[in-house]
Length: 316
Image 1 (cartoon, rainbow, N blue to C red):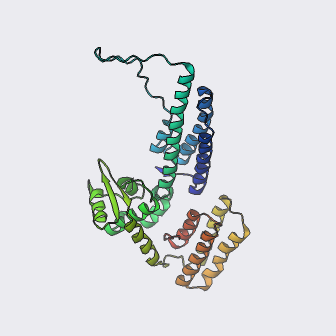
Image 2: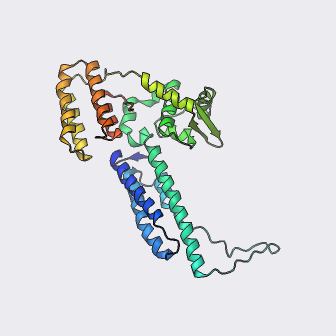
Image 3: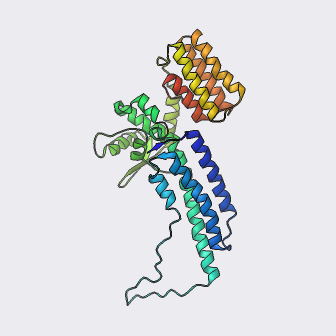
């Protein structure tokens, strides 16, 4: 499964639809005509489904399928034959009661779908191979050491930090990590659990959440991590082409502010005057300033940094 539209555009569209869905929940009236209310919500549901189907390849995937079936009618069991010695009689309901019960059931399904959508959006933000497939090619995660894999698990659980337990297999698959043998994810989580960095929940699938100790560990590691700027292109013409590509992407994303374009354009001149280390430090400072000012979203800033340095920027 791969995102084929820009991540920032997709995230913005889905976030707006989630806001619209929450407004529908707030204004939901269980006494209104069920069929009319159902038709109105179906329009919103179709927009959500279209967004997921048109944004991913393949368009029919586990996310779009779950969204499509969110309002599926349950089988009616009222007329199911019962054991003759334990027969249950279901008496007809009046129309108002039936209408209200249908509305309540529909509202519950809508609220569940909105929770799933919020989770999907958060999970996708930690899924490099889905939203940034080109990043996986650059970093070639087939060659990750065991330590690299353990650190990746912690970094992604940090992004997903909340009360939920997250499938470790899902995290690894969504980030281009292929395990060598069956059950290896359980061994990996045991290593982290023994260190007190994660809590683990095991069933058919092993899931985990970051502990406070694990959260502190990741934050400390991010503070002390050193950047390597050796992969910054030496060739001035090629570097300027990269900057032009970045500016084109910013324009497509709707970042039309002159000051942002001037900041990025200035990098061309700085590249020709500074060594790689000094240039990388200036670049990092500029991007962090843009992040703190909220002039550009963090995902876009991370894209710019990775495009120039082939590294991942840890934002505050």
